[in-house]
Length: 322
Image (cartoon, rainbow, N blue to C red; front, side, top):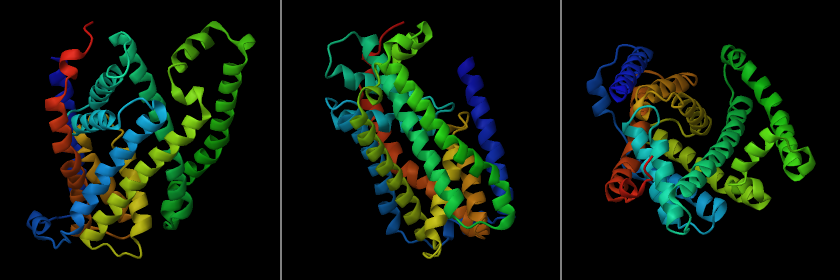
């Protein structure tokens, strides 16, 4: 019963944001959406960079978090998680991703199943923390280096202050965490519990791993950015403006899809994209086509690959019971 409730909630969110997207572009003749002139040679190239983003994300594991992991196995897990999120609400793909990563760990370790899935889960959290840090710096780049109108700048002024305060606060928090980690005398029971989890995270145990993971994940984000740039160029967005526009779309759409109820961010993604394009004076049919195409490129790039991996995966037979 709970599954059906979640599905209904996801469909409701999708419908609401699709309606908001439609209202954002005004009275829209959808026949023009399907006949809009596109550069079809650029679309496969854009999709390729979206796949490459997931490959570099896999390298962050196999050449950073655990160098014994096979890149192909991690790539399989990453694609499975993304594909599941594209069709299921509440980001259920994260659970599938951890399960598939647990299988990748199982291929190289002889530990008990539950220990391997626990290790995969804790390192997934570590990866997401690095992702969040990179995202904050990307947001800072948008806020500080993209020229918005005065009215928009006032609206995001609080975000600038939050970023400025968050950077030193994050550095201080990491310093305190590292100090407690190295100084055994200062460890309390709650600290021990936290560190018992942290001990499974390669990021805590090796500064070199941090540099490696940041490098690969930053490259993954760069590939997604290039994917958006090429997608916008295929719609006819002026090349002189496309770089700041693509950065804004990247930030806004990823913020929007954090809403877990919507399968694949359908509706939410389109609304965030249309809103971002509107900040640069792009509206109407071009904004609608851009939003639909950018989302379609992501589905075209990862969904068939992810579904194939899901169908051929062994995780459904090897996941621990109870």
